[in-house]
Length: 96
Image (cartoon, rainbow, N blue to C red; front, top):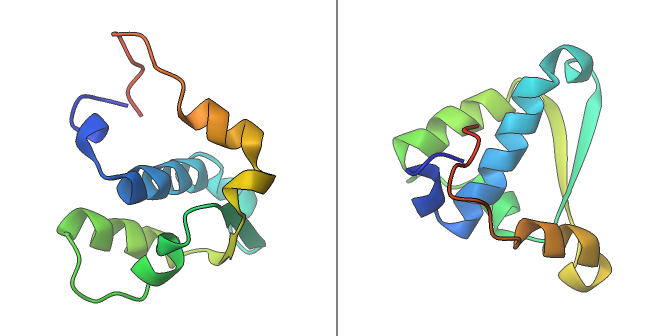
């Protein structure tokens, strides 16, 4: 993540990870149902919210290209991903 992305809220960081993954594997995922498991239940409601930042609007437009379903995955059931998402990064992060 770059320096600006480090200042995103937790919800924005979770959504950034989803957007990055979908963009990266777009050619494989278009036309298929994509089920996203996340322990951040806010993401489900964020996609239905109308008053959001322009950055989030752009991300939501990108997500609409895919047939996605976001499922809640409790953090207690997802310990490895929770741990990996909290690891401190080196001072020279790779930009997304």
